Amino acid sequence: METCIINSPLGFTKITGDKDGICSVIVLNSEEKVTDIIPEVLEDCVFQLNEYFEGNRKQFNLTLNPQGTDFQKRVWVQLEQIPYGKTISYLDLSKQLGDVKAIRAVANANGKNPLWIITPCHRVIGSDGSLTGYAGGLHRKKWLLEHESPYKQQSLF
Image: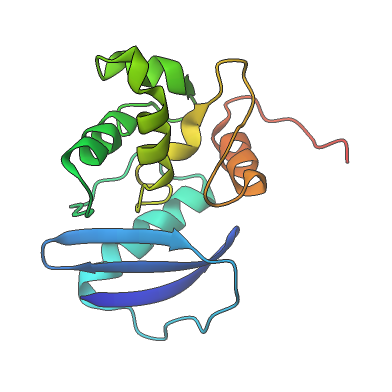
C-alpha cells in the first residue's frame, strides 16, 4: 500500500492506494509533512484533486478500491451519482437505495466514506436544508458546497 500527504485548501490530505485503486483520501486535522515524491500509483489522484481545487474538474476518473461492508459500498456508489453542484437529503438517498427506514444506516455509511471529495458525501444534507454532520468538519462541508456552487457570491464576513 502506497501513501502520500498533500496540502489542500482544506488542510493536509492523506491518500492511500495501490495497483488495485485508491483506497482512501482523508483530510487530516493536524499538520503533516508533505510527501516530496508522489508514488506513481497515486499521481493521477493527486493531479485530479488539484484540478478539482483549482475549479477545473467536476468529475473524477480514478480506479477506486474502498474497503467497507457491502451495504456501505452500495451507499458510496449511490453517492457517486450525485452531480457536481447538487445536493440530496439523507432521506432521498435512503429512498434511492430502496429503504426509507434505513436512513440512520445510510447516514452512518455516509460518515464512514473513506474517499473524501472523490465520493461526494459532502453533497448529502438534512431534509430541511441544514448541513448536518460531516466527518471532515462542517466548515469543510460548507467550503466544498460553496466551491461547487454555480452561484458564486462574495462572502459578507
